[in-house]
Length: 97
Image (cartoon, rainbow, N blue to C red; front, side):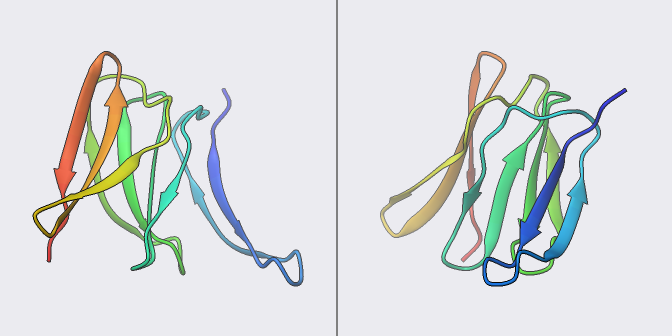
């Protein structure tokens, strides 16, 4: 059985900085924010928030359907949101201030 990983590389040296191993292979894209959050998902339906500098898992949610697209971020009235498609559903999360 295969699995996916998010691997951070140092662009100046090509050295691996950290690895976040996922439960299954992934078709999901990734989104990073100016505050060093990294969002991604997997076929098993988990949506993850990682610390982009360390790879530490900060939060995850089981959304019930495959995550096969890249998440997006948008702002409404000064509040930032992250949205992703899970199966046939569009799911959005508000980020803490």
